[in-house]
Image (cartoon, rainbow, N blue to C red; front, side):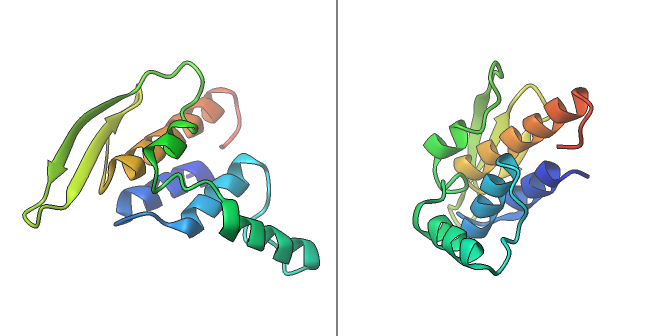
Length: 125
């Protein structure tokens, strides 16, 4: 299982926005090793992460930036559990993804699509 696939699984299991997963996604997409080393540069990077990292797992708008170019997507349905908590199903030309919120579902689906795209190009993603 590649890193993007692992992050997708974590999104599917999350119960809400997760800044740590957001930071790991940002690092994975930019080729930065995570966790960031404990150096002055690493401390500065962690501060940047805390202050302005994309909140893919908490924002549909941010999650939409993860959709690979040319991918079609649709929000199939928003479900509610017996306590009224939302869950969403998103499809990105791959099997459906179920997560607790639309942002988590879209993030997971986008990461799975990116992983599949990387595999088709011969890398692990």
